[in-house]
Length: 421
Image 1 (tube, rainbow, N blue to C red):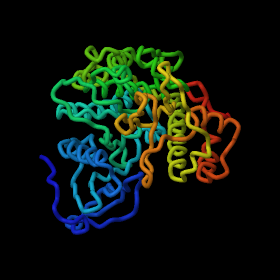
Image 2 (image 1 turned 60 degrees about the horizontal axis):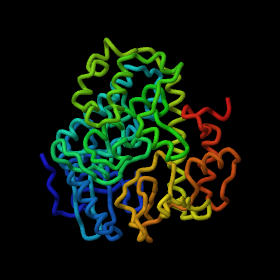
Image 3 (image 1 turned 135 degrees about the horizontal axis):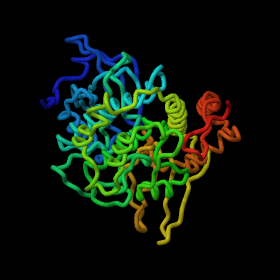
C-alpha cells in the first residue's frame, strides 16, 4: 500500500535525536514517533538549496520508495514536506554494512555467500516486479537490519533509481558506480533491468573471493575490461569455489543484456535454491582476509573524498585532470571506482559537451556544482600512502591516513596486498 504524504508538521509526529550521517544537502537523524515510541531514521533535506532538477530527483526517490514494500528493502514510512525542508522517514537499520559484518564473522562459507546474494536478488526482483531499476547496487548500499546474528540484508539508497515500463530498454542517462557499471551503460546503449543483475554479478564475485572481477587504476582500461566482459577465476582462490557458483556469475556477467539471467531466474538457480546440497560449507578465511583489505580501500577513498569536500581544501591537494580527446574537446576524469556518477548533474560544455562517462562531480552546499580538483583518485591515494605525503591543511586526512596506513596498501593488485606482515 502506498504511503500517503502527510500534511502535518514533522515535529507534530516525531522527536528528533542524534545525527547519524550527513550529506551536502541533507542530514540523517534518529527520530522517535510520538504516538508509538518506535524509532526511525529521518533524512532531512534542505530544499532551499536544491535546484529544480534536484527537487525532481527528490520527488522521484520518494515516489519510488513509497511503492517498494519488501523485507529486504529499507522501507519509507513517511514523507513530510514543509516550507524549507523535506523529511523522509525510513527504517532505522542498525547492523551496518553487510561487507563489514562478514569480516567480523568467525565463520564464512560459500553457502553464506549464497544466502547473502539470495536476499539481494529478492530485493532486486521486487524492484523489477514494480518497474524500478536501482542503478547503483554496490556494497555501500547493502545494509543489515540489526546487529543480531542472521539479520536481514536490506537494499538502500534509491537516489539514482528510475521507473520503467515492463521490459523497456532506453537511454536513461549515465548513472552508477564505475566498478559496477554494465557494458551497455558504458557503451551508452539502451538499458533497463539487466543493469542491476550485472552489478549483482560483481557483488557475488566479491562475496566469494574478496576482490572485484574488474579493476584497473586507469578508468579507461577498467571500462574496456567491463565492455569486453574480461574477467577470470584465478588460482588458487577460485579452485575451491564450486562450478555452480561460477556458472551463476557467468550468467550474471553476460555482456549481452538480452541473454543475461533475470533476478527471478537467478533465484531458481541450484546454487541459490538448493544451497544445502550444492554450495560448499568450508570456511573461506582467504576471502575474509581479502575482503578486509577491500573494505579498507573503499572506506579510505570514501573518507578522503568526504574530507576533501568538507574542508574545501581539495583544490590544494592536486589539480583537475584534463584530457584532450580526439575531437579537441576536454574532459575532467577520475578513476575512483567507488564514487557514484550521474550524467545529468554535469553541465554541458558549450564546445560539444562533457564526456560524462568519466567525470566525477560533487556538490558544495553553497556554491553548487564543482568538478573535484584533485588528481586521479586511485593514483593520488596510492602515491600519498606510499610516500606518506599529506597536505598539512587537511588535518582530517592525516587522521584517516594514520589509521589506515598500517591496514592496507592500495597497490595495482586487485587482491590488495598488505603493507606490513
